[in-house]
Length: 169
Image 1 (cartoon, helix red, strand yellow):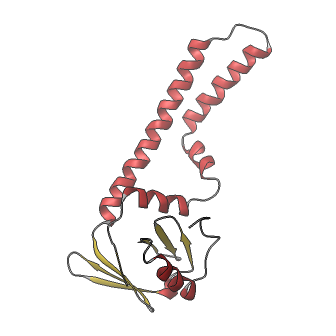
Image 2 (cartoon, one colour):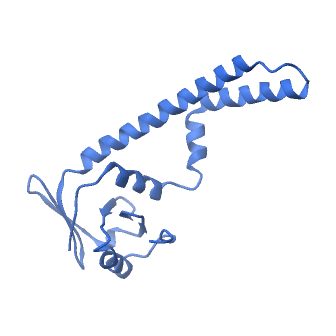
Image 3 (cartoon, helix red, strand yellow):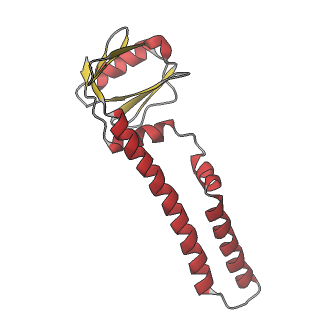
């Protein structure tokens, strides 16, 4: 069965969300430690002023929180930029074919590759994509509603499902 091979940025973002661990927000805060320290310091100063009945220094608090927000935005936009580059790199495949024995990919240059089902140990279903994961490989299959059930049946028959599918899909 042929699948569309062009991925949108939304498809890549959904795959990132599917592959993300539960506490990824904590990792983001720790990776942006300078912004987190600024926020904690500003909130500490604000609460200290409130507890000791001193006038709140709004200008300094807003300045520090605004600076921290700018750093968070900068980090987030860099991540989105990397997703855009990943989308451009991933869209080189001319066609993706899902068969009973595995996945075949044909590149624009004419080169073909085959990945057997044994290479994968789990799969996760999203709204527009299926994310197949193995020890050394991950493949993103974009699906439309017309062939979703067929692809799901192939994956259920060949790979154990990780977690649960999105509710309402």
